[in-house]
Length: 559
Image (cartoon, rainbow, N blue to C red; front, side):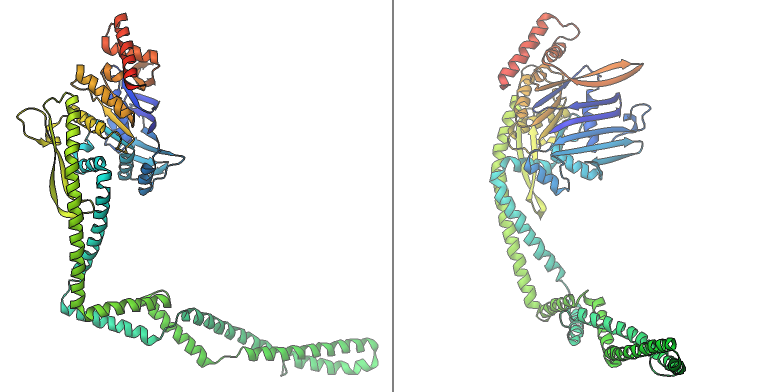
């Protein structure tokens, strides 16, 4: 439901914040107080067009923010399908309006206005006198019928959806299979070349990884061997090597070692160093032998890796992907080699899927037509209660040119509101006020089935009074038991049914006019009803009448 409305810098509004309640929320106020601005701001938040004239004079921007609580699992799933996830059961829609542009957000994340409208369609349904009603669209009319039919059409709709998916699959494959013999021969030759190239390579699973590891070892071995060989040249026997220099030093020190103890100790150390160096050279030589590899083996490994990498650039990122690609092309080649049989089988699958789709679509259409009679009958009764005395209401069906996942039905709501007038589509007959009451009748019929939790009715009482007004108020109360309803009204009969009553009023402060809104207490609500009933002068009798009207509404609705 709509929990909170926050509006800033729009028309006569500096800043207002409203907490709405469950059930029937009624908004009343003097003419010109700004009632249409309050609910108009909701439409703006949900993506309606605007002009910069709507911004309050001197303001750089306008802001509208709607906070919804999501309690229904089905509603939450529909939001999740749109990648919208309630945070602690809450969804916040906001729109910042500036000159020439606007910014829309859902739970603080900037989103395209198209997504904002889709999400709004899940959360709220607005029925305003001057709005483009969802009821005028054939798609919505069919959705309402399916919602009414609910359990009766559920299985049939699932069957249509599944059979349509199969039909589309085989239709697409059949369309793609439409090629001439020359094209097929060219494709077959190319496939044969690709298959031969892959098979001649004799690839083994995991071979590329093993070769890459071996190649890395070979490359590293060559670099290590070069360093070891150079080190051995400096330390092993040979002119100018460390070993040769130590030998010469030892010979030079040998005579002194026989003449002095100190020289003897140094000589012994030098011999020990020479012995250690010889041991080092032997170990270095053995290590160098272990690093030897065949240039032929290195070249063979490098060549094989190059071949595999070349195939990877054409057929897949791994050996496994290349081999899978080859199997896929073999299957395609078999098809091309026996193309007539393939086409025959494909046509059989297509024809079979089409028959299933026709059968399930026909079943769905039959159920819809049967349920539409009951739906139209109940709507007609509801309209008669709303002072459409001679109304006729029917649902007509025609076929769409192509199959869809929702069948082939194109439904249209037809109405005649006066004797002798033909049945015509709603959009050609109903005015704004009439359309609101038609939707009210439909919503009453759908009270236990419609899954949009919040309904807004703007001036649903235009052009009605007396018994009709009483019937409208009673139907509003009925809908309020299963939905949150927000309604602007000028009629006391409707206002008396309020679960929560709000007063929209205009004040002048510091030379500026401001529109505000506040929730009324029970006593204030009675006074507002008296104002609506009595006009400028509110007498005790008018107050008593208002009080009685409120009490009767409560007792009649069980409040």
